Image (cartoon, rainbow, N blue to C red; front, side, top):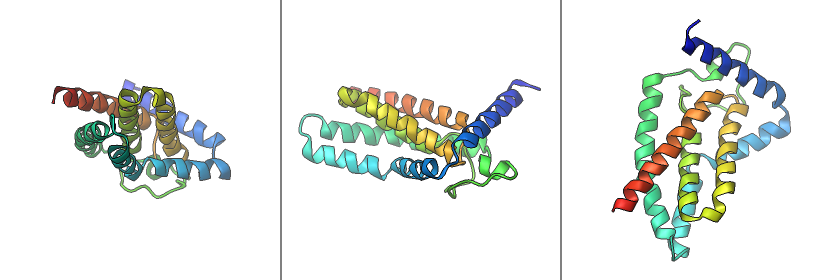
Amino acid sequence: MNRLQKLSAFDTRAFHWCNGYGRSLPVLTSSRWISRLGDGGLYLVLGIALALWEAQDGEAFLLAGLLAYAIELPLYLLLKNTIRRDRPCHRLEDFQAAIEPSDKFSFPSGHAAAAFVFAMLVAEFYPSMMLPAFVLAGLVGASRVMLGVHYPTDIAAGALLGIGTGLLGLGLWGML
């Protein structure tokens, strides 16, 4: 078994472990709500609200965020459509996802990527809110595993993509 096969086997075991212990109704219900926080609209609404009502850094937060997401989204789509990893709910027999995913492929997690971009922006502009932002980003990613639409490594890759593009966007914003 090569390294990629070993990683895939580990990922599948980790996915089953998470779903074996977390498929209760309260966990699935809360996972749906947490996952919805990562759909993207909330990030835009918060960014616009800060730009309108927070005079010190709100506008910069919104503009740096738009730049970071302009980098993250095309990279996410390129990776997802190049790697083309089937979602666990489509690959694993006898497993039913708790939600219907919006597309066919799972790697990397777009929800995790977007959540970690947002957390990076919060960490830069509002450092006192850094810990809650990263905890929420982690919960968004975990919710996607619990709902059965991502493997744990999809979340890790999305987190790395989000952190990396968040840092790149902030770096480019700082140069403007």
